[in-house]
Length: 286
Image 1 (cartoon, rainbow, N blue to C red):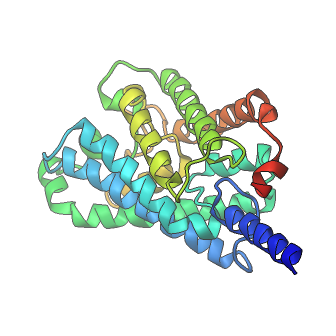
Image 2: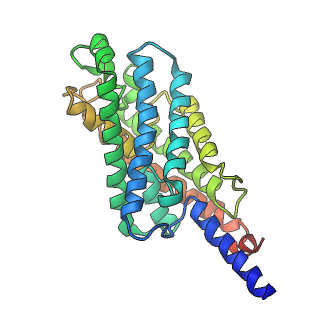
Image 3: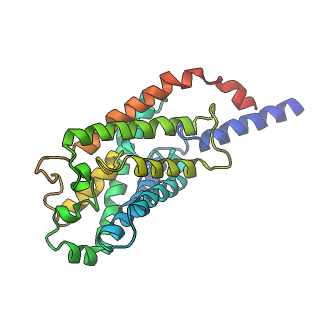
């Protein structure tokens, strides 16, 4: 009986840990509906705070760059707390693709997760656009490049002398950093945060990226984060939202760059660090 009880406790620990760990490809709820709802709502919360803080700084004149970095970081933290137990809280197609490439996340879930993330970002951006409509209209009645950056990123944030290819480079590097460190922070075989602190640490990671890698392309590092609000702005008066200040089609860069960067970061972690970590068995038994 004692042996059975000990084994049951160990199995419960493994299942409980698996439900909390991110990344993880295991099924958390029966069926996909709950997982997609979690990805939608987690990304919705992320964008409410992220795009909301940019609108407040740019259109409302309250806050500065640090406010934006912290707003995005807190949004990520809260989004992960919302979705983590149900879906793993990817909240980012680049993360979902990297998990499928290197951490056994099912490929069949990548597109549905990405669509849910995009939808959550789109709806949240519509809420921000509606709420801040008056102050945005006063700042930029024509809905031009002047306020377009509230919703979507631009090379050099619309003013610094950064080319589109420079922005692509930046997005690859920034997303590689993001995914590499997400994998390192959330790997139970590594020194993973305890007491459900993972969302807070990942949020701080996004703050750090914003403070160190925000100049060249506004650290989108997430295709859904950029395309969802870009579409929302397009459908609400920003008819040039797919182009940058140079007149070039820019929307694809915060999509392709993060997808490439996520693959680079995930590969660096899997083949550069993960293979040297202890096996999973001692961790599960500990």
